[in-house]
Amino acid sequence: MPLVELRNVKKSFRLGGGQVEILHGIDLVVEKGEFVAMMGPSGSGKSTTMNILGCLDKPTSGQYFLDGRDISELNRDELAAIRNSTIGFVFQGFNLLQRTSAVENVELPMLYAGVHARERRERAVEALARMGLGERLYHEPSQLSGGQQQRVAIARGIVNHAPILMADEPTGNLDSKTSDEIMRLFQRLNREEGITIILVTHEPDVAAFAGRELLFRDGVILEDRLNEHRRT
Image 1: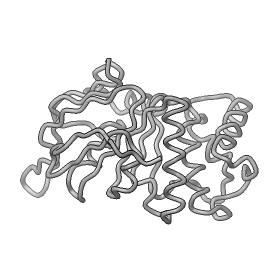
Image 2: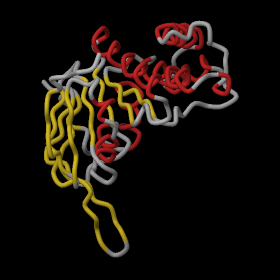
Image 3: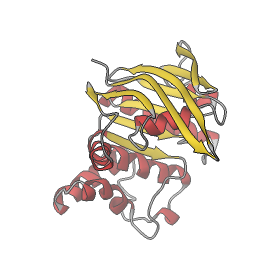
């Protein structure tokens, strides 16, 4: 059973007096343990697809199966519950709370999930240690480098033991050396812990770390290929 499956997914937005179709019937299967990079120019549909996969938006038509369950028609509260238990997110802008320590930022998803305070702290400390930030637990974002902030964001994304990690341009604000470090960290999470990773990027050098690349153009998947020359 695929972990993620889209069947003929379409997405339209109302613009003026009409409808603009952004996705024109996306079919996609992602198996457990895959590392998939979605590429394409602005307006190609990759970010809209990511939002649907991440339960941040719903398709206009078509079906979305997550671990065998059709979640296409779930309401907002049901989708929010899935996001909190099944999907971790990493964003280009880190999305960390300022004037809040690294460990408190990582605790946030568990706070929403109702995890007890002591367990929250233990799991947050462990996640940060796995990211190499065991000595930065009580630093605020302004006291951390861009790469360190992104590591905090990744720790926050994995702390609830979500089987899927979705990353939207996670290296967009980083220099090339730090970008490579972050991508190798994603690879380690994928290979050693079996986390399924779905990543959006416009950079071929970043996509080359994934095992599979999807090329979006004009609201369709133009190409779906295995990465034969994967970076490590």
